Amino acid sequence: MISTTTNKLLTEAKARFKEEFSQKIQLEDFIREEQDWIKKNLDYIYSQTATDVPLKIHPYCQFIELCPNEQEPSKKETYILMPKYLSMQQLYIQASLIDKADQMIVLMRNFGNQFSYNEITNALLGRCDPAKRDLLNKRLDTLIRKFLSYQYLIIS
Figure: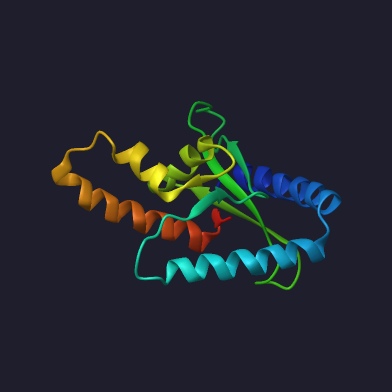
C-alpha cells in the first residue's frame, strides 16, 4: 500500500511531468509514435523467435526516486512515469513502482540511447556458467518481453 506521503509526492511528480510533457511534445505526434511503438512491441512479443532487435528505453519515460518513510530516508523506491494516451483517449501519466524483480530496467537505461537484445544478453550472461546460460537467457527473454509489454522498452 502506498503511504499518504508517497501518494502526494507521486501526484505532484505526475502533474509536473504532464505539464512539461505537454509543453515539449505535440499530442498528435505522440499518438502516432505510441501507435507505432505498440505495434512493433506486440509484433515482437508474439513472435516465436527472439531476434536481435534494436531496443531503447521509452524516450518519454522518467525515473524518480521517492522516500516512502520519512523515518528511513535511505530506503528509496524507484518509480517510472510514462505518458499514455491510447488506453484512456486522453493524456494520462502512469506511475509504476519498479519492484525488485524489475530493477533490470534501471540498469538498461545505462546502456545508452539504443542497444540490442544481443548486447544485453552478452553483457549479462557473458561470464555466466554455461550450464545456467540457457535458463538465464530464457528468463532474460521473458523479462525483455515484459518490459516491451509495459512499454518501458520500445523497438526503435
